[in-house]
Length: 142
Image (cartoon, rainbow, N blue to C red; front, side, top):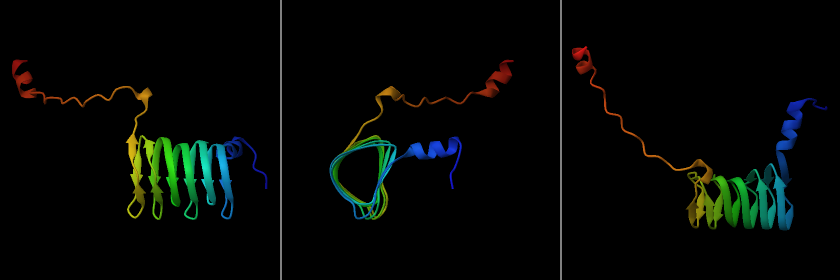
């Protein structure tokens, strides 16, 4: 059954790639959009979008992506622009650079983490503490 309209085009363009169970790839892989990996990859994975690493997946090498969700076994250096999340039974062994790291209960992270914030955001300003206004004093002087 064919789906017509903008919704079908939007859903199709968001899919970057899929590497299924039983697939073994070696080399440099480039994807555009959300990419799911269920097989084995050895090498460099570059994704302009999110990478989802399934429970049966085994990755070794380097990953560069917008964000990474790990449920499988990853032995790699990871650079994720926005964030990395490791969910059980996920295992990550390697150094990472990201803005946001989430390690869920039961997941494993063994490596070094360098937290970087987006340079476009500018400086982080301290919270200003506002003193409570003395409204009684204002009412008396009126």
